[in-house]
Image 1 (cartoon, rainbow, N blue to C red):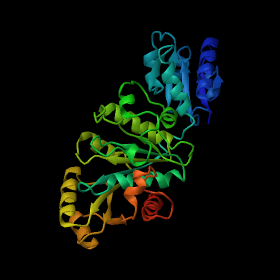
Image 2 (cartoon, rainbow, N blue to C red):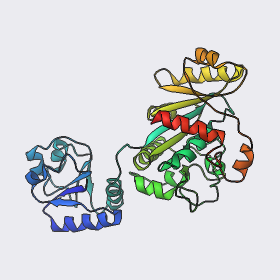
Image 3 (cartoon, helix red, strand yellow):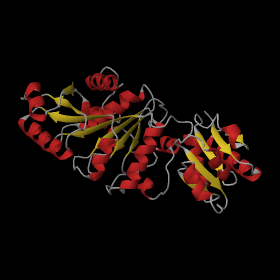
Length: 343
């Protein structure tokens, strides 16, 4: 599934070849729109030169995602023809070079492949961030995983995973950027355990900063994370708002971590009322004086997993090992149960 380039402009062929080399891909080039129709539906990405967009529009190819028009100076009729073929962008070179490199690099990824699990605390101190990190650590042993910290008032997930001193991109770095964020760029830029390819990446705030990034930056980062990872774990903030609602909607699975206490259940019920119905959520319960049956009756959700108490958990986090210091600890077993159900 190579990228597809349709153009008769040798200069455009050379320019796209140069940018493709930087992205690590090689496009398949056609100078005849009719000859390209067979490859059109299955190509990872379709780039149409401004010189051929009119002829491509006349050929009426099937509508699909991932079609973009590229060239130096879009002439008359280019934008109208781009609408006919369903192009998402008319990109002018050389202004859009960096954007195009990211787009080409992402063509290697399977769009939207990353399974996304949201974790939110039903009550303060429920341990949602700890369980989110555990999911990331266990999931990273099976494929690429990223834990995304969406709570600026949380403990900092890089600190919980022992990555606070590892260089890499944080929210403050993404806030200063603009345009489309490449999946590969994000995957390679976030902090990960040094020398451990099976460890999860983390996207969080730098030490001493808790400024909330703009909603557009968060949306772009989560979309790039989903394109570039097998598993994305969202540690969701409890202060529910429009952005949290949108992030919840992006989740394949939503876990609400609730202590089985009267106060914990009451707080969780309030949270669920604010989230609204139809979220597809289930519960991760920490033991307390309230039975699972009563927790389910009060919240209207089923209990999916028990979040176990784990000896030595604070020490493991303080040592920079994260909540899952080895695969047999109780949190690892609970995380595997969730991931197996989600799969």
